[in-house]
Structure formats: C-alpha cells, structure tokens
Image 1 (cartoon, rainbow, N blue to C red):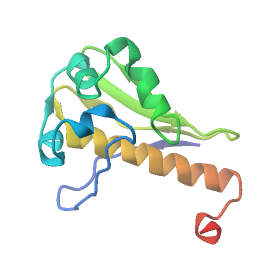
Image 2: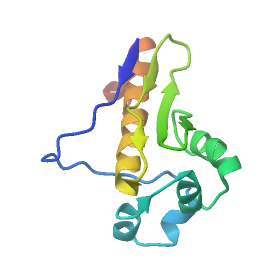
Image 3: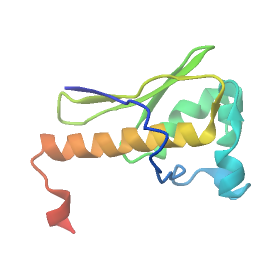
Length: 130
C-alpha cells in the first residue's frame, strides 16, 4: 500500500510539533521557527543545527517512524517505510522556498500515517493499549 500526502485545506487549523530532540527548537520561539522560510537544503540543515551531510540521519533518528528525506535543488521529499509490512508512506514534495511550518506539518503527517499503517499491519489497536 502506498499513501500520498495531500496538503491540508488552508481553512483547517493543524497543530504542528517540531521534531523531538531537535536542537533548533531551543534557539528560537515556536512562532519564529514556524514562520522561517527555507530556501534550500542548507537552510533546512541549519535550522536542525546540523550539516547537510547529517540531515538524513537526524530526520531518521528523531522521528518515531524513522522517516527518510530526499532532496534535489528544487524539492524536499519526506516518507517512511513501515517495518514488517508492505506499506510505505510518501509525502508530496515540498518545493523550495517553503515555510518551516509546512515542513513540520508534512513530517507530522508522515509520522501519523506510518503509525496508523503499522498498527493496521500488525493488528494493533492504539486506543486499547492506553
């Protein structure tokens, strides 16, 4: 199964969550971070307090789903495989420039969809585990 992210309707309010453990969230307040414009992959790496060479590892390490990131000079793509299943979650590519809030929304969508797909693939009900 392959899931694809579609950007949310602008009229919907979506709560964003920065990556757990990311160093940049401590440097600026949330409003400043979410309003930041990312013009290239170097800008994105800088906001995570890392280098471009280590960005992939940081995204993978600090997401519950082990998300991946691929980029070109014009776009960033996020996604995740779902361990123990044939599921893969892939978000629509973000075109440079984009706002940090848009990146966070997309990454949160990948996390949520991967978690849901994992639960479905493993017959696990998240609500009954609470």
